[in-house]
Amino acid sequence: MPAAVKLREDFSAAALRALARRAKDVNQSRRLLSLAAVRDGKDRGEAAKIGGMDRQTLRDWVHRFNAAGPEGLFDHWTDGPKPRLSAGQLAEFAKIVETGPDREKDGVVRWRRVDLKRVIAEKFGVDFHERYVGTLLKKLGFSHISARPRHPAQDGEIVEAYKKTSKRR
Image (cartoon, rainbow, N blue to C red; front, top):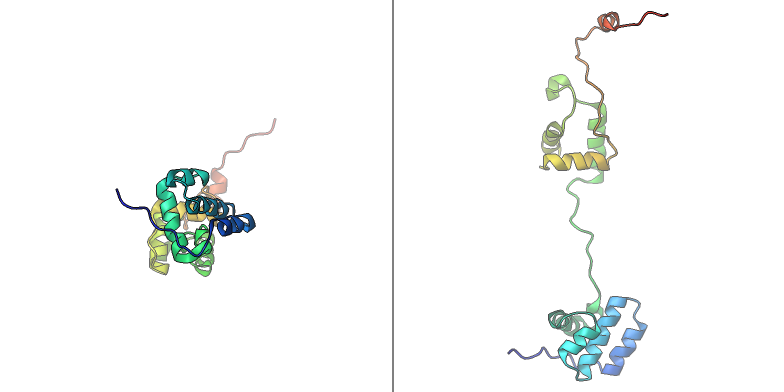
């Protein structure tokens, strides 16, 4: 069975408890209390239970404490991955969607997700999945419902003449 990881010697159990009392972060405080229990000579399983964790997790926090001291016991959350399109590119994409396609240039009469995926790849060099293009449109405030496209050669007078009208009673 491997030996327990040694806890650094420059903090006493009382000092660790004092740091836990002054800590503003609850998670850091409970980790400090577990380390204070280890310093007092309690079993690692008991000390881990004090902090609401298992022995392996306590071992990981001991490594972080040994490397960085009490500051190493904070949670380091990230903001997630960096967006693949900048704010300026998103604004330009929204303008492209708003103006609609050019029939000669784009070859379509209305935007579909697969068409927008192609436009994004050509314009910005980013390859999104077709489903994510729909998510991106929703984030930009666009609806999935669009107006029925009109053929460019459509004659408005013929359309009006073709419409059915009811006779008044």
